[in-house]
Image 1: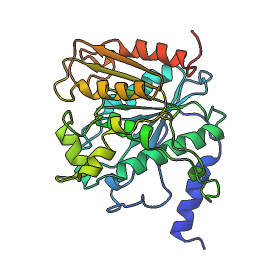
Image 2: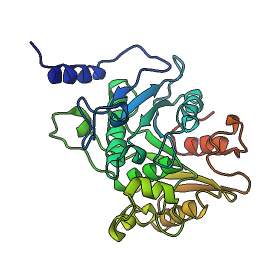
Image 3: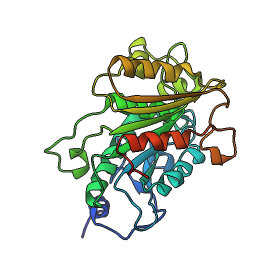
Image 4: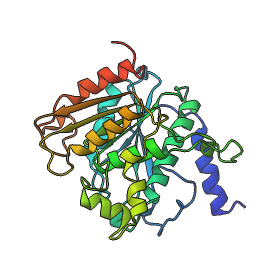
Length: 294
């Protein structure tokens, strides 16, 4: 008779068997057993991916991992499922990550572990489902933008000899979209995000490591960034610092700074005073070959 652990592993590996598409699939765990460093077995201890698939026959081969914002304290639905609905209309297969949070007792590197595992999973599923494993992007907003920029600058190659097929994949996104992101943990930091990520008294070394404008290199993926001058929560300097670092490293990027609007805006259709960044981003994605020409 199989043990519960073996049964969980068998069920987890079954996710590599092609299935009929669904518009909105049930959440799937990132690991077959407990996540590394899990503090318990509650829902908040279980990082998960939820798939949002384009209408039948419209998938263009691209995939996007979506990291909602929320100050590392909660996850904003309009920056998760809301983005997935928009990208699905463009033919992009989307996965929203429920990552572990500081409000539930987690600190770095738990969030990065979740994001890296999720990116590897999305790439593995792209291979499984006949999508393009070389067109796997990441989008994050606010603190989700910080987590996205962390993976964009702290990715790792896969382990070719791993028994788990997911761990053989690279965690490097092929491009990044950063929406009013937290980037720096120094002068222009969002204090709540920094505290939830690193605790009350992080070391200077850790602050530098996760101030992601200091971690950009020539192999950082291309990025699209947008922010508003009126953002009083996460200062626009965060995007400016990251864009400047990309420029110095000769990494392709697009930067859109809009005059009007605050923080946490999401899509223009969300009903807030959001600028038309979605149209600008779609144009950039086409320029990068991530979307087909209209």
